[in-house]
Image (cartoon, rainbow over all chains, first blue to last red; front, side):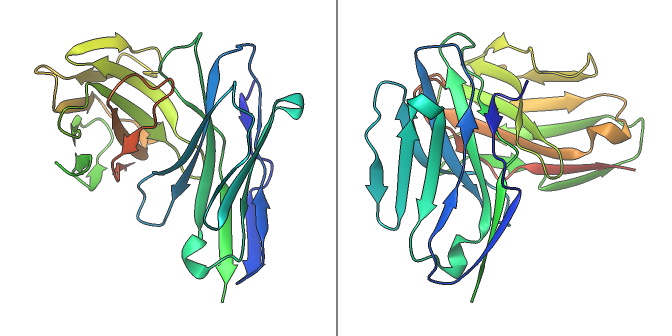
Length: 115
Length: 115
């Protein structure tokens, strides 16, 4: 079973629009971490945020914000006033205390921001 | 180094050929991970090293895959008798500690194409 689900395969928005990328996870652990990574066309995965299971505070970093809701097992990512440079594939990932060091990645959401 | 360096950037191998992929982690990072990313998919865990010790190789898809990190820094992922299904991007990542609670720093990957 997929531990991380990103139901949106591709999203296109016009520049300056807001966009939300959805992530739903599944785990039986009480201690776990959630991550978002950005993968631009160059291929490397760029770390965006880490959130532990005990901290449900939402976080804002510039135009980026994250909404963590344990009740719905979701960790959604919103980009405000999108820019062309935001075009990339975005991955949500989970690491669990019980399975040690491996990350479970979703299948990614490809975001295209149209100028 | 400033980042995780992987070489070669691209590799084309004939089916049946052996290949070796190199990863130079960030200096001082004790943890090193290999992931395989098929086209249009999220990365999937292959193996994990802490210093020179390979602590988890549960993700290696077959005994044709072998990884080593003999001196606790540079790592090599070797694939013997390559097959077409091995075609993917192989990503290396390093971390100061274990993955749980830490973000990885990823390299740009090696794109392997088996023809």
